[in-house]
Image (tube, rainbow, N blue to C red):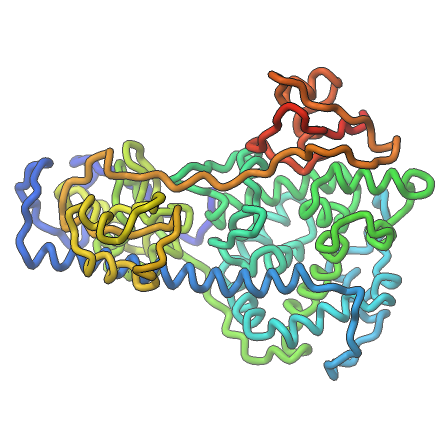
Length: 510
């Protein structure tokens, strides 16, 4: 349950409950559910509503692309070709060591000590401090401002699980606190969950709802995941690295260290270069981001405007309804509803099932009452169409009985003569009842395959298994007496990955 200063409204749409609600009232219109016709003025208003939503979605997409560009630069940056320091910030390795210990704890009683001083001596933390201060400065300012939205909530959840509260800064290097972030590996949301891991921690993921994008539910899942990793690996920094690379991979690297990893640190693992560069530098990025976020003025970020925390009521919605419609009922903007409800990936609540929607604080009772008076044919002002091979804007317009001009108005970033297969197109519906068959499903993302070639591995890693016809990952795991997740982690696969006859899987040691 999300804690707030006042209790949120959990409102049903029954007539009995609504009779007690106050607030503005919209007279009930006697329109049958099958009605298609609507007054011209209403059609224009509804079309405008769909255009507003299309514009807001385009803005979100543009902002996410800017975030992803900065994150790609961050993760692809090579610490092996360091340039001379360009900043004038006086910071010594000992300062980094002490401040990192203040942030995350010295971890003196953990299985693996935290040795920041030797890491700072290699200048990796200092290099990422420079990256945030110079190369990504404009974007990092935006990320720091977003901290105001969620920092208190995240710290509360970390504190409840006995974890260092400053692990909140993982969100800076994972996503820039963007709920709509999607990585090249298809990790999604503020905490960048892969679908298999997200589902494993109870997040709902389908073509309509993706709770990896819900900052509150995703934070609960991330904190549970981090707690599991800390308990498994015995170190906050190793847990952070495992959050990026997977616990199985970090454990394999620990076993490769002299003495089986006893008393060793993440930094010694990173120096051996068996991990991907992104993982080797994950902790340095975390330390650098945390140092700046903790004391932004010291690093030249003197004009950060922290966004206020989100406050909201919650309203039960029984069937498919556009967020643009709910925004109108709540007397707020479409952008505000999208920010409160990023988990509804299509800007519409799912058809055929009830969900809870967040609306601005104080508007819950009025929204519930107005929704009860809303004719069925006014719940949806648009559908989203996903382009298939050979389709043109004209053919899409003909399919939905709208004009090309209407499609262009609702999709401001659409390139008419350069449609891509799988591209999303917002289609205004002009107050019609939307049949279930009008919804098209988003294309399935490509999933990684197992390797079809043998890999050279040390005997400590385990054995190799060539997939035979009819075999499944679960059956192979049972055959070798290991867990399915251990098998998937060892081969960089997910629950949706495809294995085929002839593929070679690494069987990790038990």
